[in-house]
Length: 253
Image 1: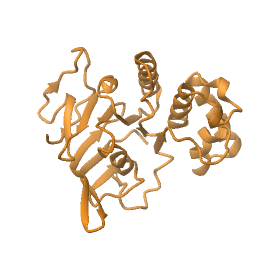
Image 2 (image 1 turned 120 degrees about the vertical axis):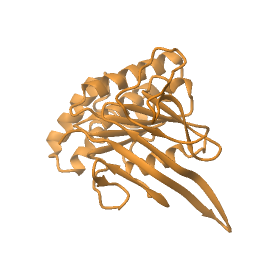
Image 3 (image 1 turned 180 degrees about the horizontal axis):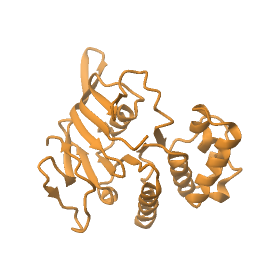
């Protein structure tokens, strides 16, 4: 099967807090095309993680749909999470798994034999430059090593979409640049071409993405840089980034 587009359409999400209703997301729509990196930015508690969980199929919206190609992710029966769609954040495993088992766990849970999953995990770790992490546990890793292991887990095997929650918010502009370059190389090497949806609290650190959305005070999305519905390209600050494909962006300020 070839790579497919992840589509988020008219998503609303809120929570009941006592007698009050707290709105988190309001009429949010966007696409992630194969081979494209889309970044969601916003302040802490703006709703970035909630949006990414909905896009990954981890959480259901109150209203709206999420689909990968023709398959719905909001019906609770899609079975794509962990296999076709990979979720990555900086939390690490709750169990005391060594790094290879942690990276290979999504593959093992979706039918790969244990030995095959661990071999694929080892290859993924080597690909991102984290071979020295083999045999170690999450608590023994540095912050940078956790970024590398997270990316290895995200791209082990052949996922179609990798959803990355705040993993690349590493300290220092050089580390952020290295993480961005590594992520781009992983996307370009993926077969079929994988799309990435990521969140970051820092707008500047998201500028390597093909499109950058910001969550507004109205809980909708504003396109900060990339391509809009009418084909107009909102330029990046450095003026030399080009958007990928002809994907649309829908949002309101």
